[in-house]
Image (cartoon, rainbow, N blue to C red; front, side, top):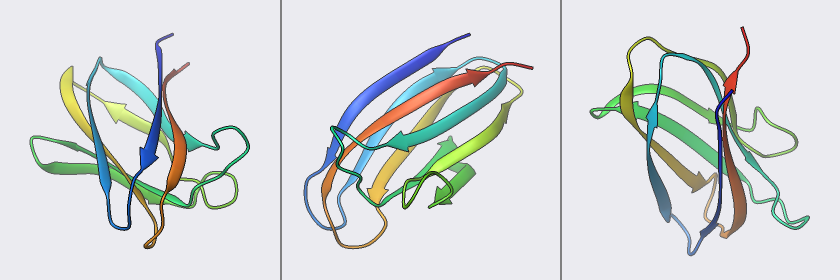
Length: 101
């Protein structure tokens, strides 16, 4: 099982953090978590070559974003964008985990 984790910070209103991640074929969960007890209202999107493959706002605990069962058929570079769901700022943890079949 593969897992990657980053700590990020939405610096200002309407800021978008982007991460480029190589994902192998399989099923993946991409989620944001609270950082040191501080939960930021996050939104997520996942794209490949500017084609949207998934997005979420608030499917995780509370106001956190979570995309479950993102199916990757072909290994590719994925762009993951994390933003505040509104006009706020704050910290978050981005977690990308390969899901067991």
